[in-house]
Amino acid sequence: MDDERRSGAPDDPIASVLETFREAVEAGVSSRGEFERLKGRFLGREKGLVPALFSGVKDIPPAERGGFGARANAVKREIVEAIGRLSDDVARREAMSRERAAAVDVTLPGRRPRTGALHPLTIVRRRVEEIFLRMGYSIADGPEIENDFHNFEALNFPPEHPARDTQDTFFLQMPPEAEAGRREANPESDLEDRAPRSPLLLRTHTSPVQIREMRQRGAPLRMIMPGRVYRKDEVDATHSPVFHQVEALVVDKGISLADLKGTVETFLSELFGAGTKARFIPTFFPFVEPGADVHMTCIFCRGAGCRKCKGSGWIEIMGAGCVHPNVLVRAGIDPETYTGFAFGGGIDRIALLLYGFPDLRLLFEGDERFLGQYAGRLLGDPA
Ligand code: PHE
Image 1 (spheres, rainbow, N blue to C red):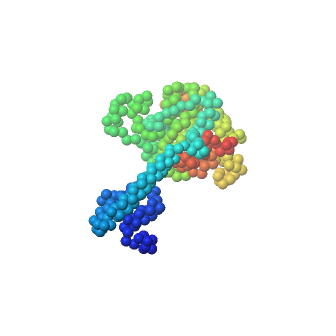
Image 2: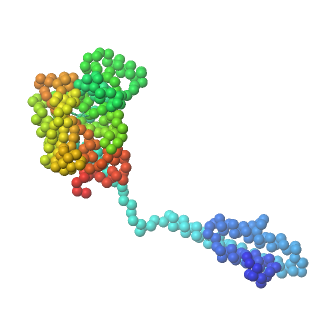
């Protein structure tokens, strides 16, 4: 407070307290806490400015005490009343802000419910399944934790085949007790009993489901086997240790390579568009004879040659072949009566092609902002 404003009553403590009080009220209080501090500053029993006026009475000449007391009481009354009004103000403001917080603003725009979307891999898998269901195939499933018998041995992999190498296959380590129990359950070593004693692994392809289904159902047979498979691969744009395959198996009387080629072309045309052709490049898979790498018409240039197909007009899409007689025998089917074909490839790879995604990791990282855009659609479908 400056001297000029006090100059009207330089030595009048009563006037000075009143002026200080008015200034404080004018500055205002913004919270209950600030109000309490102001109240304490003027009326506080110990250090309050108003009680201090009364304890100063003893220093005043007796003749002036009466007048001083009357004025001090009047000022005290004024301050007490003003503080009462201030308290009401603070309470009213508190009630208003509570009300505002609880109020519903009906003019706010509503929040849309967020709907889930199918993962592109699920969309592609279902498309593939629909195509085969229309052709009269059934869908079969098998365990992801397999054993060497179904994954390799019954599929005619020689014991030293490199795919059995721990480089590619995740073998499972069993606790010794479990291992012993598993072996004792089937002490015989003929074909029927080999499976339960065979080392466990994460299946490296969906082909072991062929063995399970043939052994369980016998021939004739017409089915597809979609599912998750595992290989010891480093993650990059085209590799993942977990990926998805789908394969088809047909076993019947008189099934030939011509049936295989016709079926493959029908399937690829349904999935990638009419006119998609297939060519077979001979290769080796232990479980088929003959075996082939299937190439299809490049879906980007329709065969003209482009950067994606390295100018060849063809894209490698899956493996195929006629079921090896050894596999039929191990599955308990007579190869003199029945023949069959099988083909299979990666669902992830098909998805990359159909969606035009540049990188496999987009499918596995689960980023909703990316995946949510596809909500049931394949690229090229109407939005
Ligand atoms: N199982 C093979 C693989 O994973 C693909 C294949 C399936 C090949 C059926 C021929 C027949 O590479």
